[in-house]
Structures are given as structure tokens and as C-alpha cells.
Image (cartoon, rainbow, N blue to C red; front, side, top):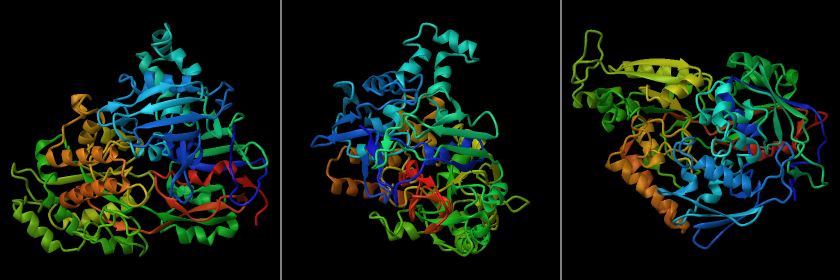
Length: 594
């Protein structure tokens, strides 16, 4: 029972290679965004709702505490084996709920502290039950990773490496160079990027791994012969034969290759405002056009101090709201707009955008004024008026206040280092020593996970469309890797205090209250009441001023080969939306330029 996809413009033709690029192994999110989006539900292209995808249907009961989920009859993994509820049962009971494999059950598969109950009805039907309403479940099931979780583990392949099923699992692990079967299992079927590194893992995606991302300079994926979607004529999708990602570590090199027409669709790393005029000049030569993105980010660069810092003296400084307020007033955002964002954008805090139903003008505009005198006055009032011989402000223990800002220089945005160099000048002008620490994204993620950072920067997700489901800047939430400004509080939320002591910390009263409100919101079947509860969370976030915003830009762009069709027009841009995946790349095709 295939899913019929209506083409954006017209029925396509088979053939061709979609050429793109990644910076390295940590750039897996680009693969998820382009060829890895097959959750149970799927976001509509305009991000106004969700529609069935891998699931033929998901039907909630009246209070959204129970969902009947039906899989498609005849759906098969890429090796031809049937996808059934046996895979769902294996994945949930033996992987998701196995704390040796997953650190706590995902919040999307729980309500409060209680994991969902799974009932298998038949080969294609199962029921999930929660201890109360889980009104965001349908939306969660349209998100990358969360929506995949129940259909990500092909039992027939993975059980041979699982200690509950295979007597020789430990031996296999040792022979493969791993200490335990759990490590081996995670490597083969339970890591974030395993679909790009294990060609043997059966998949439900449109293209399946042939040349892994971690073994060379090219990652290559070929059409899945058992893919479950067709066009209206009954022709099986995808139209494109294969997808190829060249490993290009330097954004400058990637830009040059884009200008030469080496990429058929790309919107990552080099697509800054600064580079748009450069790309416009070579459009004809490169044979590409622009696709417009509608930014949903609250700000292009969130600056988050580590409120869970391992050094108690540093933590005490960073946890002072007025210290963060002073740093915000010390930033000349108009200079950032002029020098870094090519005179595009406006000053904006990490708050819902004007297009959001949760818009709070006070939240969005507080502490934006460039006022170094006020910043100095606030810092003096906090007791940081003493300075060393170099002019740096001192903590009460006599040590200079110093902030090292970690930046993933090969991440989504390539201008963060330049922007933070400007901010460092602003902060140093008020006596705060500031260092910029650029590094590959792999190292960045490890440092944040190990709680070894002073501060970091990232995009302002949760500005429009994903405020409720991706609220990591508003409360210590465990979505993705967790809120960068308080990962130990977020880990406590994820594990309810049952995780490793070194990685978790019970939040104090105010963030605990936000967590309680969020749990209450998840359990509320009435949409208006849910919105009211989320506004309470935002009110606290506004009052606490957890993180510092910089500049909001309302639009972005990508490039599309003139030979690539059915891509369509403008798209919302957000990691939660998984841009450009809801544009259905499986129905894109190559043909003569128009």
C-alpha cells in the first residue's frame, strides 16, 4: 500500500546524481535534512500541520492519551524484509527502554517520568498509551529522530548483535574491537549517524548507503529498491538514481565549487548574506538559481553562558542575571549588522518572532540598547569594580573574569567566528576578557557534552513554528543534545535524576517550575490551555534572561541547479522543520534547464 506523492510541478523522469557536500563526519545533520527524513508522520511543506508518512494512519483518542498506529501493508526494509510491529516491539522494549543503550527514554515517548505503554495488535497495528494526555505526540512523530524512533531498528538484522538475543554478542563485539556488545550495537544501529556509516543496516529511506561517510572523501547513496512511495502514475520513487556528498572541510572551497556548478542543491555552510552577491555573479556560469528560505530563527547567533559550569566561582558569575544583562548592553548589534550581516537584519533577543502567536515584544526587545556606560555601571554594582593591571575585572576571589566562547567553525553558519570577534571587542571594552575558541563541530559537541565550555553560540531555534516542540533556549530542555546554557539541568529533565551524577544536576526552583509547566502543558488536551501554559514558561524566560540574542534576519537562501525540477518555491528554514526535507526530494528529478 504505497504512499502516493503528488509532484510539486509535474511527473518526473528517472536518472542522475544529486551532488552535494559535507564538511565531515559531524555534518550528518545535512544528510538527515536531505535524504534522511522518513518519520511516522511528516510536516507539510508550509509547516502548518503533519500528514502520515511511514505510518498509514495515527488515530488519537479523545484526550490524546492513546494513539492507534497502523503501518503500511507490504512496506519493506531496503533489504526486502517486511517492516512489521515486531520491529517496533524490538526497538522500543530492547533499545529505547534499555538504559545501557539509551540514557533515559526520550521525552517524546514519555509523559512526565513514565514511559509509554506499547501494545501490539497485529503485524501492522500497534497502540501507544501514556499516563495522561500527550497532545504533542503527532507533532513529535513528524520530527527527525523522534519520529523515526519506533521504526528505526530492523529486528532481523540488529538482534544478532543484541545481548538479549544472541549468545555470541559479546564475542562478536570483541572481535570487532569493542569492549561490550552494547558499544558494538550502538556503533552498528543506534548512533546518530549510523545510517551514513553502516551500509549493512537496512533502511526505510529513499536512498541507502553504498560508500560510508566515515571512510573516504565521498559518501554515496543509491536508490532504495523497496522504497514505499510512488508518483500518481504508479512509478516508484525516488526519481534520482543516487546522491553523492563530497567531503569538503573548508567553507571557502565549498563556495568556489558551488560557483562552478558542482552542487545540484545546497543550502549549508557557504550560504551567508556576504556570499549571496558572490554567488549571484556566477549564476549563469554555474547553471544554478536561488531558492528563498523564510527564516524562523529568533536570532542568527545565540550566545549562551554555561550556567552549569564546573568551576563554582565561574558559575556564580554566569548565573547572575544582571551579569548577562550587562553583557547584552555591551554589544553593538548595529555594528554586527553592518559588518557581518551585510546590513541585513535587526537587533533581536532569543524570543518568538513577529510571525509567532507567542510574540512578546518586551521579551524580543529587552536589553538590546548598545549602552557601554550602563554595562559598566551594572558590572560595578555587582561588585566587579576591581581590575587587574591589564584592566580586566576581577571576581571576589581575585581572579579575572574571563569568557572563552566555543564556536563550531564548520557548522551551519560560517560567520560566527567573525561575529564573535566583534562581540569580544565590545565585552573587552567593559573589562571582560573574551577569547574565541573555533573548532571542528565534532570537538565542539564533545566539549559541550563534557561540560568543559565557558560559553558557546548557536542558531536561535524556536522562533516560529517550533517554539513549543524545540524550546531549548526558553527552559532547560533535553531536545537534541539539550540546552547549551544548562545541559546538566536538561539531562536531569531527560533522566528525572536517574542519570550519571557527573552529567546531571537538579535544577533550582525557577527552572524546575518551567519544567513542571512544560510537563503540565504536554498533559493538557485543550490547545488554548496549552498555549497559556507555554506563555507562562516564556514569561519566566523573559524575566530570567537565560541567553543573549544578537541579530535576526528574516530570510535566507540555497542554490538549485537549473537542471533540477520539482523543488518548488520558498521554504521555512529551521532544523526542527528539517529544511529542505518537507519539499519531498524523492520527487525531484533532472531534466533540461527551463
